Structure formats: C-alpha cells, structure tokens
Image (cartoon, rainbow, N blue to C red):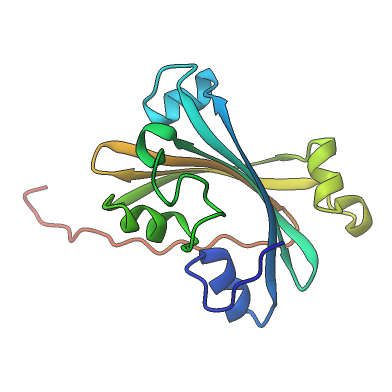
Length: 173
C-alpha cells in the first residue's frame, strides 16, 4: 500500500484536495500485449508491456480501479520500468524523468454494469450501486503512445467535469 503526501500522482493530489487520505495497492508484471492493448499503444500483439493493476482508496475506502499498460520499449532498463518501484509517481512526471515529454492524452468515457470482480473490489454491493464509469485513457508523446489505461469508477460516486477551449468563430469558417 502506498501513500505519498505531495505526490505527483493526480489521484493523490485530487484526494488531498477533497480532504481525503489517498492510498493505493498495485502489482506490476511484464506481459505480452493483447490485440486491443497493442492497437491502443501502436504495438504488435505480443510485444512486451508492463501491466500494472491498481486499486485506489480514499480514507481507506476503495474508489477506483485501473489497469495500466506501458511499452517496455519506452521504459525498459530505466529507473521507471516498474511504475511503483521508482522515486517518481504519476505517468507524466515519470516519463519526463527519462526525457519523454507527454503532450496530450485521449479519453473515451462510457458507462456500463460492473463486472463481478469490479463490484467486489469497489465494494459496490455494500453501497447499492452496480454501474461504473469506464475511462480508456492513452497518453502520447508526439505521435507515440507511451501509456494506456482502463480506469473504472463507481458510477454513483463521481461526476466528470471537462473544460475545453473553443476556437473563436470567424465568418470565413
């Protein structure tokens, strides 16, 4: 279980801003990329990725699950090869530490019924909610995908808020 005050982890910063104590459990292994993971990362199926499974908690209550995949071709042999073993936490800060500058990310957001293992890990049965919000997020450095993740939140405990700039309209458009 990790708990870092002042962390570069967006989860930790958001939890602390909400007055909650963040912590998380994680386990990382090297695995061959599935077809879907390879597609999202621009790899070939079977290329090796570091898969990290997370369970995030706020004040000890589970509030988020995530499965993260990073190409070993990007992080292999560096101090950040395993996301939770190095001195830096958070995808953007970790990649920056090895000279990889993330300049954007893409998210696809859906809702769906929770799978049984998600309901158990998030203690949804206890709370009465059975729907989750799923976010597929992929970080890019230029045209290269450097991390993709499947993030799952309890649907009854979150509100997603986005603020995006709008290009000014001109009559020539």
